[in-house]
Length: 108
Image 1: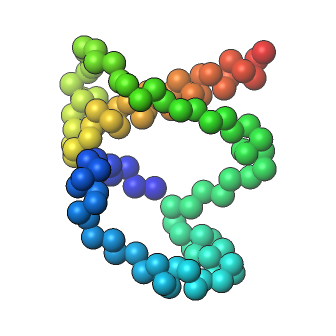
Image 2: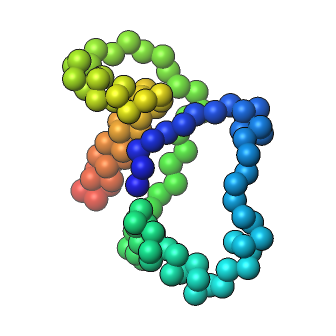
């Protein structure tokens, strides 16, 4: 799965060209869709156990502005991936928090 993240405003999104061939998509059979998923190198099949353990987590709409000191190489790693590096750092931290919360739930 690609780690590239592009952030756009709602008005920018409205101006973007939709390159999806929706007519072709609507005409795909279930078998063709399943085959496309199987052939997608980024696909991850989620099993019944995953769905049973899944929990909807809605991050707060507001983010808190803080000052944080990070190692130079950590910042450089995220910045070299382009715009949105702070969002990627937040996503990594969110994944860590979620994993720790799941471990805590399993122990209780």
